[in-house]
Figure 1 (cartoon, rainbow, N blue to C red):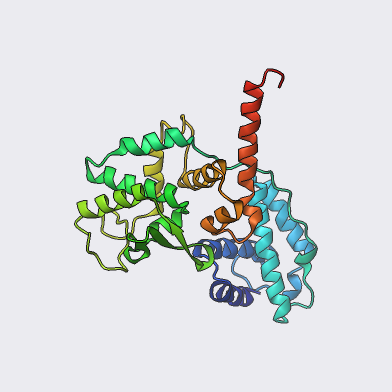
Figure 2: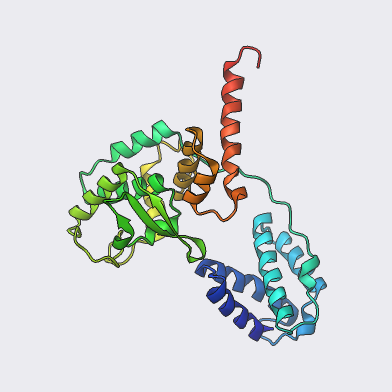
Length: 294
């Protein structure tokens, strides 16, 4: 079964274009079950991969304090691996198929007020290199609804300044073309000019770290928290809040849900529909506060 795991992860990376983070998580979740069956590092016979084993592993997750979302991800890994083993003839039956996913609580995405966010971006200015970089980061993230990995993964050749477009590599290495606003382009131009990289090659990273390599996601997270502290009103804010705000503000101003789906790079419209709940809750709150008979 451990040999099958290595084959599964290789296929998952090549054919399904699984992200490195997903592959690491799947390896950890499946290895935890195999270790439960036979002990760390020991060989596991196919016959040991049973429904009872998986149900016990699921109970262990809950007992150790894992959230329902973590349990659901682990179960998704087990089911994918189990299907792979069944398809390859490693096991005769698929015991993971009968396991039910835990019910996940619906959490509305955290968005930032449009006027407050715009004012915070305008206050950044370009007086020093750090401010120029952070303004370019935040403007691009909000202007085009980018994920953290998409933002740090941008190369110079991905930016079409004349057309006002970005080529973005999203989940599963899927590429999409998204518009980018004038303010974001101007902030990016100021950052690159200040760094002396206005003519850097197309495969060079847009954002560089202190050591000259591609900027890390953790640095972006720190910049967002520091620059948007006032807008977040004391709550912890992440780069993904800018992506949520991008989608919610577009929907508030009448953008089509299908268009927002394409801009965000969602495979399913169901992933995008969560923003309709954000808009409805905002409308309901405004109604209850303003209507005399609400």
